Length: 295
Ligand code: EPU
Image (cartoon, rainbow, N blue to C red; front, top):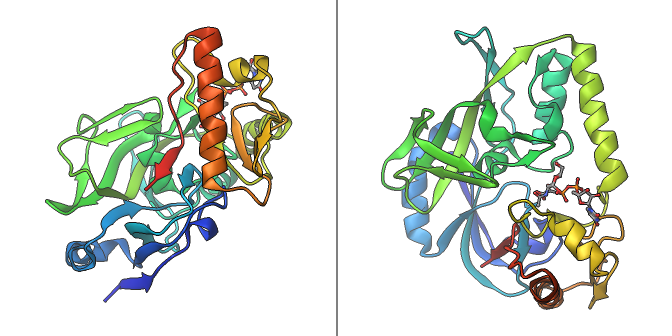
């Protein structure tokens, strides 16, 4: 049996914002091939399933949660799967793989396409599920197929047209509300490894200069409204560095929520509510959360 059920994982230890109480249980899928056993394991737990990757886009409340965390054990290396009609190299990647590792893996082999996504702290599964993006590139643009699991149809391969993707949004059409990204097939372009490495390093340098990459954060907390920048609006309103109960907006980038080490989810949500109200009042814009709040 390649499913492990662990009691009570603590979300504060599993999210980059370092907040959150215990979930009921965690189901760890050790090999994607064993996903067929997930349905039975989840049914036995009687808690709402929630797929957890790197935990870098989550604000978990400091309370016990009626959730069954579902995660994939790391371990599988990407496998090249030939080329498509346009000559692009196809790569099968596990949903468990860390995106930064994949970005490096591709750069070392002269495979181009992922460079703008360097520095995004996520698993491949989580990045697909959120359609992670930066510097004009979203991961959905590179997808040739996605392997998912849900309780109704089990493990299956989705082809383009069978999902809908947008700004930080990925919806497998017809899937159950709970679905898990087991893996993805990406199409990358061959290029000189040094050129791919240089573009990857450029992305990392740009991020280091503008984002608090080593702080305990959950990335940008608000979505950019159409045609506007949440960070710029918050900055103009003086939210850069604003702190409340151990949580703050980064002094580097006003849309990054930071846990100073002694923060709480209550303080975080209060700070976000203040920011939203100020933006609504000054700019007449209702900011939408980009971060996911649990439960
Ligand atoms: N700006 C300010 N003050 C700030 C922050 C930003 O004036 O405190 C200005 C910048 O100078 C720039 C503009 O606002 O002119 C946009 O800022 P930036 O280039 O930093 O990008 P962003 O729109 O704030 C988005 C994504 C990031 C992604 C970057 C790079 C969202 C909500 N955020 O940020 O994604 O890394 O672009 O492509 O879409 C995330 O999803 O968690 C995330 C960090």
